[in-house]
Image 1 (spheres, rainbow, N blue to C red):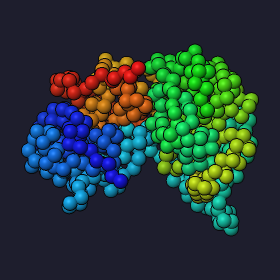
Image 2 (image 1 turned 60 degrees about the vertical axis):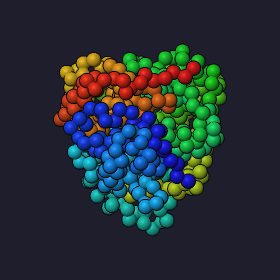
Image 3 (image 1 turned 180 degrees about the horizontal axis):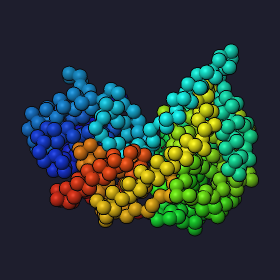
Image 4 (image 1 turned 45 degrees about the vertical axis):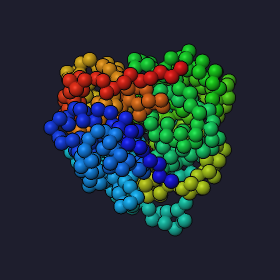
Amino acid sequence: MTSQVRGVQLARLLGQWHALPGRRRSPDYAALAGAVRGLLADGRLPLGVRLPAERELAEALKISRTTVTAAYRELRESGHLASRRGAGSWTMLPGTHRVASTGLWTPLDDRDMIDLGVAALAAPPELLPAARAAAEDLPRYLGGAGYHPTGIIELREAVSRAYTDRGLPTSPDQIMVTNGTQHALDLVLRLALAPGGNVLVESPSYPNALAALAARRARITTHGLAVEEPGWDADLLLGGLRQARPKLAYLIPDFQNPTGHLMPAALRERVVATAHAVGTDLVVDESFVDLPLDGTVLPPPTASFDRHSRVVTIGGMSKPFWGGLRIGWVRASAPQVQRLAAARVGVDMASPVLDQLVAVHLLTDAPAIVAARRAQLTAQRDALLAALAQRLPEWRVTVPHGGVTLWAELDGPISSALARAAEEVGVRLAPGPRFGLDGTLERFLRLPFTLPAADLVEAVGRIAAVRYDLDRGGRSQWREPTVIA
Ligand SMILES: Cc1ncc(COP(=O)(O)O)c(C=O)c1O
């Protein structure tokens, strides 16, 4: 059944839509349509929801019905609304779209948009030769059925070798190849967490991981990270584990998304020991482990402190190589891998052989490819930091020494309002509340440095311009986050 949003409800969500920065020169109907698109983009207005009838919304907003009619027409034309005579109008998103790392749907044809919602690099030049070489290898597999639920042996060998080289001895039967790290997380949760189970996560955390937990209807406890290094507070984190005794904890110790923090070795050891003592399984997401910057030396892998198969590690190719490859993996005990493979047969059977062969070729060249990625990320991060220092000096930023994102503390609880305003000037942002659970984090903004430096500098210039517009437009439309005790 389609849910419906009433006129007064939509009016409340829209707030001061006609006063949003960057809209002063646009007609009312365009401003209204833009505000509805903004609500859809930041997830406050769900997809597939029936909007109020034109007359009802006009009354609620105290504007003419023609303005609403024109706004709905524009939304239909831009692909954000589907209407059927006599049945109403539903929210939707334009035909060709993709899911950004923030969970936002974004149109592919929006070429002028600088997309800071996605924290991932374009493919490296080595990808095409790797794909060609993989096609040459494919005949070796064509004589079989092509189903390899744990992954093709060559790739499992390459991945297990990389763990062993990092000081974590691993055999190929401890690896299961998945279609990306997100898929790895979903499979692990299916196996390890009964619906409604108790989970501890960092706050802020990776939005799609939170979505995967929501799909399991997990009951979530959070551990709040500080902006400054090291981010985790040992006493609070270990105390949280002892108190909540969650079934599972999901952590990103290596250049955490979004903060970029790196968990020190001593805390890794204590977290693993405490988790074991209280019966918590740890899911450690190593998405960014290959991307230390500034010569940062990595602490030992979290799983290297594990003596009791408490730690399941997930990782993948998306951040150092390319997200479009859709190759990730789980590292666990061999029996756990067997159970995961059995669970996976009911989901997607196996990963594509050709893509796995591409991954094998890329991993063979990993040292050179990853070194180039780090150099690129360092230069882009520095350009972003310099632009922020120059254009938005009031914002507080801790320099991340790895990963692909920084987490800025803003000069007010303006993150969602800023994201809406920035969209109007061609910059897509993932506002702070996307990385939390309760609508807080309005003082924070994640900024990835995965785009070319020139785009980042241009984006910061545009963000700075609309940020100062927010002040001139008055602050009354943004409320302080409400604390619910
Ligand atoms: C912490 C974290 N986990 C998982 C993912 C998803 O990775 P993949 O593209 O390999 O599914 C991302 C992507 O941004 C991430 O940041």
